Length: 205
Image 1 (tube, rainbow, N blue to C red):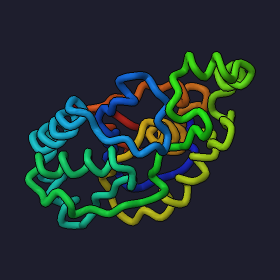
Image 2 (cartoon, rainbow, N blue to C red; image 1 turned 90 degrees about the vertical axis):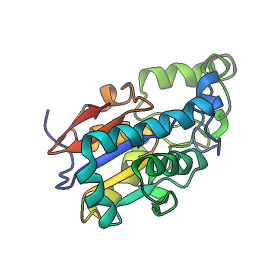
Image 3 (tube, rainbow, N blue to C red; image 1 turned 90 degrees about the horizontal axis):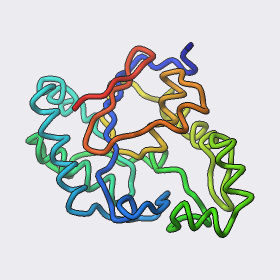
């Protein structure tokens, strides 16, 4: 499948570690929920794995000041724990609002069964058209992809980011050429790294 948006730079992508909302199956969106103990260990484990497998590359990224995170607390904690495990100063990275998770609006804090019970017509619509559906006062994946497009176009070098599952799905479509319907359903793992490069992507760890 053809690439939607050309990106000549490599993006090392880390999804934040687990939070209590993740554990409980709650829609998190832009709620500022911290990592739980499992999530903190996942973040450190990502740093250890990358240091072992890609140490020289990490050193190059560090020298170029090429570490960036979403400003939400769970991604900042993930970045800082991962950097500490890599042997870098934890707080020496940039923040980017474009890397925030999509917001679920009125649905944030709810479990999917609660959404289905309270918003049955909307829940059915989202299940059918997940990429384009916008929750009440929220965002769709399509809107998120539009938000990310200028960020991708503005990259001038390889970068390592700590961000969110929805952002990874949007990048799968924008950079990897994955069909929106498939990208919207993709599993984005915590405790592993996703590398976007040369019009594709692969998991590390």
